[in-house]
Image (tube, rainbow, N blue to C red; front, side, top):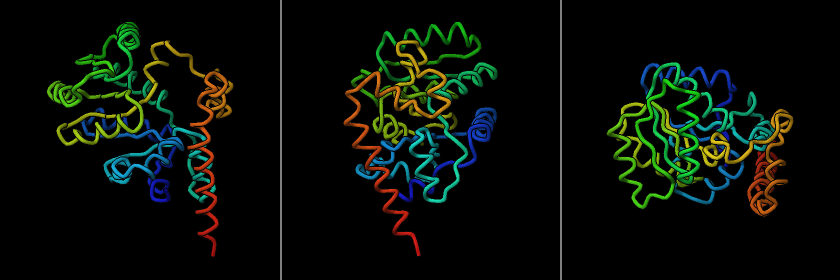
Length: 241
């Protein structure tokens, strides 16, 4: 866990967006993992995913407030959150401004179509070079098609850790592109699901809003977030002289 925390991007949203924008402009590759406590807990339990997080070519940004607080407890000063939803919106805006190519993979077909319509309306300069829903039987065929299309931005919404493991497996086939696993972001961007009200976002309480809307997530929340805090406290205690 500690090695994952040490890899977190610490400079904040504005600085990170500048780096992402430069990668787009210069046609460099970038693989971004947006991390909440559950992400890092899965990395502890799943060796393959842990290897993805450890790899130097992977950039881990703090999506969840639990990660920010955990890092601060360990003396790692993080300058706020960088959420998957906000990062996706930034990438769409940048791709539109630079007339870049976009590939979308994941979510239900109706969600994907709604998102494509929104992109067509709000980001008319984006070149959507490919899209597949999240129910494809052959993921390799999707990524081979993706590599052939040479997109500048790739958003994969298949859930953690599947989306990151697939990106990692085929990453070396690409010469350029910003790749991000975005989980349920397509649902939010398409309007299929509402994001938390601005007050919840401002107070870093999106997790509480999700629990209110989906009480079934409580067990999952406890398994990841509460255990995560326990591990951080133990690590902090053991690090004292």
